[in-house]
Structures are given as C-alpha cells and as structure tokens.
Length: 266
Image (cartoon, rainbow, N blue to C red):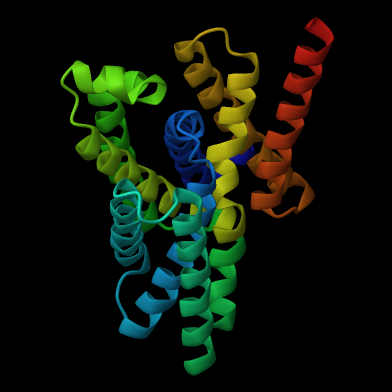
C-alpha cells in the first residue's frame, strides 16, 4: 500500500500493465510467424526516430511512433515482393536506425543525457502526457486484436488457408506490423530501446512453451508480462534497481521456471 501512495508509482504501474498486455498480445503472433527479430529491428529504428525528434523539436513519442510505423511498413513492403529476405531487411533497419541516431548525436551536442533515458527506460518516470499516449495506443492495440483475432490465428498457421477464407493477406500483414511498431514504441518507455524487444519475445516464448492451446498461450503470455512488470516495479522501488533490468530479469526467471517444468514433465 505504501507503494501505491506515490503518483509516479501509480503512473508506472498503469503504464506497465498496458505495455505488458500489448507486447504480450503482439509477441505471440510475431513469434509464430517467425518475426521475433522484428522487435529488435524496430526498437533500434525507433532510436533514430527519437534522435530525429530532438533535432526537429517535436513531441518525441508521437513522432517516433509515426517514424517506426513507417519503417516497419517499408520492411513489410520490401519483403513481400521477395526481393530482400526478411531477416536481411530487419538487419538493415537495425543498422540504419542506430547509424542515424549516432550521426545526429554526433552532430548536435547536449542530447547525451536526454537520450540515456530512452536507451535504458524508466517506467517510474512516466509523465501524465506519456500515460495518456500509452492509454490511447493501448486502446488501438486492443481493438485491433479483438477484431482481427481469428484471422490472425489462421494467418499464423496457414497463409494459403487464410487466403481461401477471404483474408486480405497483405492488408493483415501491414496492420500487424503497424500495431507491433506502436507496441515497440510503448515498450521503449518501460524498458528502453536496448531491451524493448524482450517485452515482445520472452513472455510469448514462455507461454508457447507451456500453453496447451493458442488461446491459453495468449493468456499465459499476458500473465507473464504483467507479473514481470509488477515484480520489476516493486524490486526497483524497494531495492533501488533499474526498473528495466528488474522487469526483464523477472521475465527470464519465469521463462527458466517454465522451461524447467516442461523439461521435468517430458
């Protein structure tokens, strides 16, 4: 109860819950479609967007969300024509985003300390404006997955069958990439650019390891993500630890326990 008496902790918990649920939902579909590395690529592309927003003097999260969404859809467009392998396109985005950020930071002095917060994140430093942005983004993510759940499940297991059922494959791929780009931007505030992809990959991987059905895997992924965020905040508050490291550490712990349980039962 002492923890909840602080406004900054309340904002951090609310943000963490929304980011955790969003990333867990997106992560299951991305892993099943063998696009887990996309999270790392988009988070580093977002690094370039954040640096660019500083130079332009615009609101960083709104600009970065638009920038990352644009980059993600360009990757999907390039890979859909089979001209560039998907992993190569993601690696290109990964390198390009970091290179852009390094060039900007080298050209414009004085942003080093400011960018540090985005590299490693701090969920306990969420502002009211960022909480509002997270809430609106979370609503978009929920609406998308609620309306598209069945088509995404079908698409994850068989594109041919999804096409026979009348699903617009190209449109669904672009929508999934767009929502995932938004989720990555949200995760940056929670755990930073370096660890943002962990929010998408680790809870979903844990869930797919022990889940007995697709729906149970989604629910377990959400549970692991939410529990890890809460554990991270509590550990950060009482033991003066970095929230991002504590959160991802909790995720790895839960994955290890799930892996151990699976190994013993098989």
